Image: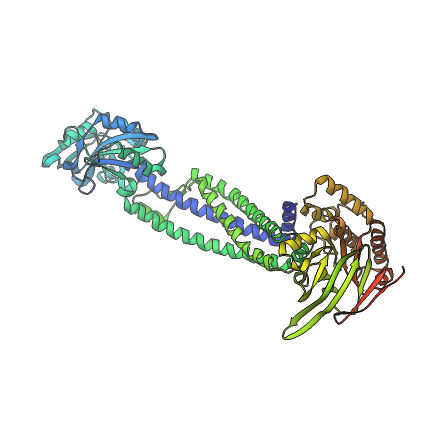
Amino acid sequence: MYFKLAWRNIWRNKRRSLITIASILFAVFFAVMMRSIQLGLYSQMIDNVVGFYTGYVQIHSLGYWDEKTLDNSFEYDEGLIDDISKIDRITGVIPRLEGFALSSFGESTKGAMVVGVDPEKEKVMINFHEKIVDGAVFEPTDRSVLMGQGLADYYGLKAFDTLVLLGQGYHGVSAAGKYPVSGIVKFSSPMLNDNLIFLPLKEAQWFYGTDNRITSIVISTDDGNRASTLKASLAEKIDDNIYELMSWEEMMPELVQIIQADSGGGLIMLFILYMVITFGIFGTVLMMTAERTYEFGILLSIGMRRWKISIVLLIETLMMATIGVICGGILAMPLVFYFHNNPIELTGGAAEALLEFGFEAVIPPSTDPSIIITHALIILVITTLITIYPFFIISRLQAASAMRH
Amino acid sequence: MSIIKTQDLTKIYVDHTVEVHALNGVTLDVAEREFTAVVGPSGSGKTTFLNIVGGLDNPSSGTVSIGDTDITDLKDNELIDFRLNNIGFVFQAYNLIPVLTAKENVEFIMLMQKKSKKERDSRVEELLVAVGLGDQMNKKPREMSGGQQQRVAVARALASKPKFVLADEPTANLDSKTAINLLEIMANLNKEEGITFIFSTHDQKVIDRARRIVTLEDGKIVSDVEQNV
């Protein structure tokens, strides 16, 4: 009966209830859209760099991250790789040898990161086969390079042209080589696209003179949110006197800072949105309480306990909030999914800013269900808190004076 | 046997800085099965008296005993429960719950008393038939006339099987014919089921049907007479 009473009370003043429900609906809609776009953008930014290159966790020789030289490389240990591969939810354990060299084609020269990779193991990370736009991916035993499309465009070279590399190898040895370009790969991150040259791992070890050494082991997982758990599991497998373990947040603090700063701005916007909605709902509850003081007096006089009257009011406001939340969700989710599958392409200044930081200028909104759940809960909590006001009024109400109202 | 006993009831309101003595030492006994009218001019303290007897308001001093219970000693929740189980109210403005049907309005009281569905259904029907609304059970208050609404209010007041019913100007908003009809119903319930009724009223029709007339003036009982009806 209390639910029936609450439900019918909502529709006593249809226009006001509909306005309240609509305000909740739009609050949820905008909050979900805003947050989905924001989190989608962050996810995109992370995936651009972490998911397709850096990995969620890396293992280096102790001190490598502070001083990235080939002298801080370490011996490639197949046993360690196998050991790590057994950890739950790890999808790839990828050895790399990273160094810098001058690249030259024709009359042009440019500094580049020359990375030794195993194209088979990289299938779960870089996946050259998906990114190849010209030529073909090299085999592990080939003596050729793959290069980013941005760098190739800089030189104006194509597959099967020859690139000269000149640098410094392990313990200061000269590193020099002339390599045919087996293919050109396109990264979504301009930062990677413009700066990377890949060699097969064996050839890179020869080029840099490192023998069987590598600079990093990149770990990929199917659950990026578990990077810290993954790091803890890895810590049990490796000797921290020899190796250092770094999560992507530690390797890219500037990315974390960009996300945190932007997220903070978004949260302030959401806070303002929720404040507006809070006062909207509070206005409704205020009017509802004032209009129905007489009725509360009747209910008290015929023997309804105060807390029961309050519960009916709480059910009423929660029902309105729930309808608003559900409708807001129904309105927002198809759009979120549509734009997730057909990402919003940014143009102008916003696009340039993202490209400058090395990220794709597209936003696929996040479809994480926790977004709508969080905002639904926020609305329900706000609604519940607002009903403290009528609870307070009802708790002090005298039946006789209420009926003189 | 006495069902209501008031002892030296006073009620003082402070209107701005002026003290208003709404009740001034009212002592009254009401026996079971009485059909009593409390009469008097406007501002004589009739409604205040009924409110205090019904536990809707607190006296400034004095006591109200219903049966063996001094309701002025009860805590808030105890008083609410006491009203639910012992007192029926009929108000001048009907005061039905507008979103509930006649049936649901009457049933609502028994629902709060946690009566079984079977018991609720049979009593609701019995009461609405008794007040002549057996065919109007599913109508909401706005779909009913004033007289019909007041009859639903009488049925609601009786739903909890109260010790007595307090009716504050129950006929004030009704036309003569409807008022007489309502009085007939209440008189029958009094006679046949032994329900005690106390009215506050200006209405001569009610006064004519009452077997006891208590007259208040300036918050004091100035006469208390019985009459043959």
